Image 1 (cartoon, rainbow, N blue to C red):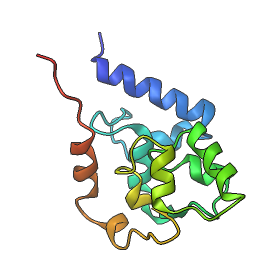
Image 2 (image 1 turned 90 degrees about the vertical axis):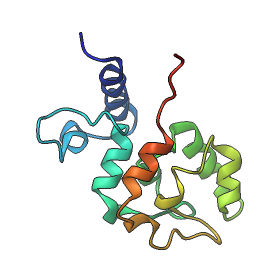
Image 3 (image 1 turned 90 degrees about the horizontal axis):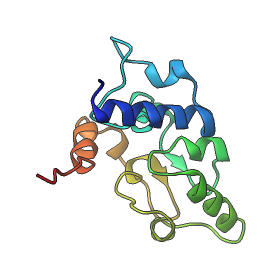
Image 4 (image 1 turned 180 degrees about the vertical axis):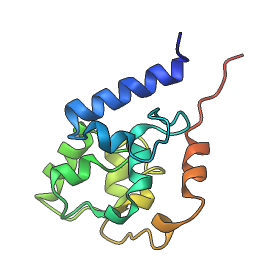
Length: 138
């Protein structure tokens, strides 16, 4: 029986293909054995392999580009698109409509916020992966 985390990663990959416009080769790119990385979710793994597509300006990017940003889901993207029709969004505004901006910071540009060299930082994967680690109950 596969480990529960592998099952969870497969579920996440399926979700990305169904609702976020990802293809199977995109999700598995960079994998030498054809298996998903258990340390980070598939969307974050894709973003880390495709850093050239980031940061994304949340005030200008289309829906498809926003859906590829780690930490942004379909509901948050819909709220961003609705809000930015009326005004430019700041990082604080995004923080109010999503659960956590920690994962988002290296991947977005907002009014008054630019990640600078965060996106290209060598230890970015380790920093994000360690902050997303699940705690054990026992």
